[in-house]
Amino acid sequence: MRMYDIIIKKRNGGTLTEEEIRYMIHDYVLGNIPDYQMSAMLMAIYFQGMTDIETTILTDAMAHSGDMVDLSGIDGIKVDKHSTGGVGDKTSLIIAPIVAACGGKVAKMSGRGLGHTGGTVDKMESIPGMQTSIPREKFINIVNKIGLCVIGQSGNLAPADKKLYALRDVTATVDSIPLIAASIMSKKLAAGNDCILLDVKTGSGAFMKTLDGSIELAKKMVAIGEHAGKKTVALITDMDIPLGFAIGNSLEIIEVVETLHNKGPKDLTEVCLHLASNMLFLCEKGTLEECRKMSEEAIASGAAFQKLIEMVEAQGGDSSVLKDTNKFDKAPCERKVIASTDGYITHMNTEQCGISSLVLGAGREKKEDSIDYSAGIILNKKVGDYVKAGELLATLYTSKQETLDESERILLNAIKIDEKPVKLEPLIFARIEKDKVEKLVI
Ligand code: URA
Image (cartoon, rainbow, N blue to C red; front, top):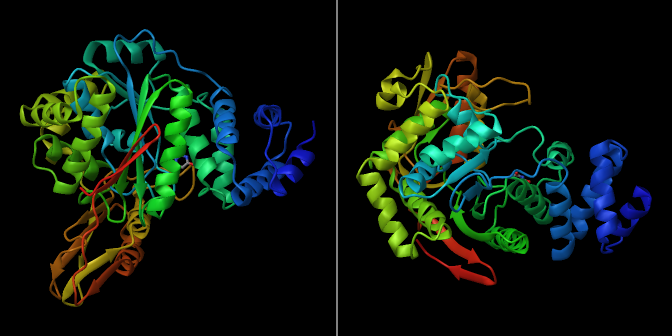
C-alpha cells in the first residue's frame, strides 16, 4: 500500500477502505509516513470530507494507536464529559464535584489550553501543589474512595491524535468536522469510561462557529460513541459570549468556588446544572428532572463544594486557597478597561476575548511557554448590558506590564457597543442522543 495512492483517492473524492485508514494511522505514528504526505491527506479530508463509516474507522484507529485505559477497577458507572473548547469554560471543575456528590463516578482525563481556549489541567495547576499527573492505580483508588479525580491525559493516550493535532494546527485543517470528531472521540474511547457527555460549543469563541455545523459535529460524535458501545449524549451550548465573568486560570478557579457556593454567574450556573443533570442521567441516577433537582441540592447543601475540596486534597493540592480565595496570588499589574461611548453591548468576539487573555499570559503562544496563573480578565459587562461612557467594561490582570496595551486593544475591538439592544441567544440550543435531535431554547 502506498500513501501516495491513498492521497489521490481522497483528493478525488473517493471513500477510503478500512485497510487504507488503519495503514495510514499506524504508519504515521511509527514515522513511516512523513508529515508532508499526512498534511496533503488532511487537506484532502478537509475539502472532500469523510463518510460516517470512514470517520468511525479513523476514530477507532486513532484510539487504538496507544493505551486503552481499563477503568474496570472502579465500581459503578463511570461517566466522562468533554467540551469542544471555549473561553471562560470552567464547567468541568463545577460539574465533576456535583456528579460525585450525587453518587456518580468521574474518572476524567482533561486537556490543556489550545489556541484561544483554556484547559482544565492548566486551571487546576493554578491551585498550589495540585498534581495532574497521577499513576493509574492511584487515580482509580481516588475515584473509588471519593467519586472523582481529574488528571491530564497520559503521554500514550491516542498518540495519533497528538501528532495529527499538532499538524492540523499548522496546516489550517483544524475546523473539519470528521477530523474534530475523530480527534475528540479517539481520546474519549481510549479513556475507558462507560458513557460520555459532550458539550459542543457554538459561536464566535468555539471551533464550530455555526449552529448547523455544531449540530452536525455533535451527531457524528454521538454516533461514534454509540457505535463503540458507550451511551453518548451531546448538548449544544453557547460560546458566542464568554461563559461567566472570569477568563484565566486562578480567576476561573475563584469563579468555580463562587458557583459551588451558589453565588456564581447565572449563565455558568445554568449550563453547569444542565451538564451535571445529563451526566447523572447517563449514570442512571434518575430522570433528567430528578437529576436536575439532585444537582441543585448538591450545590445548595455544600456537598459539591466539599467534593471539590476532597479532590484537591487527594491530588496533593492546597485546599486552603479554595476555603479562602483571597489566598490566591494576585497579579501585580492591572488595567481598568473603560467604555468610550454609551450604548448596549451587542456582540463580543469571544475568540478575541480569549486571545486578549492569552496575551496577558493566561495561555500559551508557543507549546513550551509557561502560564501566568494569576493573569486574565474579569468582565464587568457582557452582551445585553447597557454601558455609559466612562464605565468599567473589564479589568485585566498580568505579571507583565508590557502586555496590557495590546490586551486592552484586542478586548476593546472585540466588544461592539450600539444604540439598540440585541435579543440574547439561548444558552443551550439542542440535546442530541442516538438518532434524536431535540431543539431547546434555554
Ligand atoms: N478539541 C480536540 O481535542 N480536538 C479537536 O480537533 C478540536 C478540539
